[in-house]
Length: 444
Image (tube, rainbow, N blue to C red):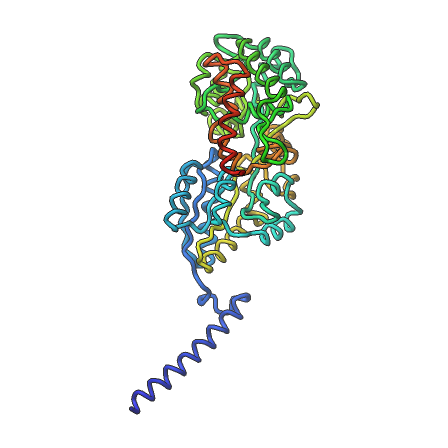
């Protein structure tokens, strides 16, 4: 009995001792009096392998250095964005989410309704204040019902990349942006088939770069897939027919290289890299390729916004290329550590260095003093981020719109006309039926 009483007294004393010490450790954690007692976490970070491996390596190094400094374990997994999306879907179904996942515009739209992303509105405000604010497009693409569930890291846009030396040799001082028709006419005059054609746009559903291209071209005619309310479709319109007729006219000019109906997303890049096409419409990946493989040719590659539309505006769709979401794992220590890691990635030195070597535009103000923007190639993407419109314009990128995008609506109409010889009316009729079926599932 005495032994049992002594054990109870010691247990109680031990409990009081460790409770007091634990409270002291928590209170002192801000000043790191007893850092060894701070809660540790093992983080899984899923992120994208990009066209700029140097920036990927640098980011991974910073994540691992942060973890070592904080005493956490971290595992960084890099794969193509499509693979990350597939893994996220499987992880959501098995309830085995990573702690942090990279999200682009499409992934963010797709996974936000699943409630698998935590609210990071406070971090969004804190980081924005640190840098002097976010670009408007950055805020638009991640704001849902007035809150943010991801932090934008970079903004990208497809712009026209072209061989400027070909233009100069042909007496053209500036890239023709007065209209899309003027661009086609100029490229037709400058091309020298069969070695050099005018325009390297794909007419194949696997070539999804052109999905963006044709969407921007349509906006120049006032055409869009949906209206501003993001619920009403606007496919069978005079503006849409005007765009499709001009697209078909451009094909009839013979400015596209043979085989474009079979190109995937490597086809247009290769056409520019091998100087088989004067101009393509693409994000920054070809510029990174030239920098790494043909640095002497990089100086001859120009960058331009899209030609102006009938309203006099140049439309460039800017989107979230890199963003980070803190996943709703239910692990409070992991969530707290994840938030701390993201603060580190937005710190002054780390973020500026990553933007310098990654090639997209920043999502934030406060970096426009960097020397890289004196390069017109880089400045083009910065300007697009500052003034670009979001995907889904004039509406928003809703889950309905995201699902419709998986059907490659612009390329579907284009290939129907070019490959299957359909009329613009037939192409519009088919897409309208597809779109009505998609939207009816989301909007009752």
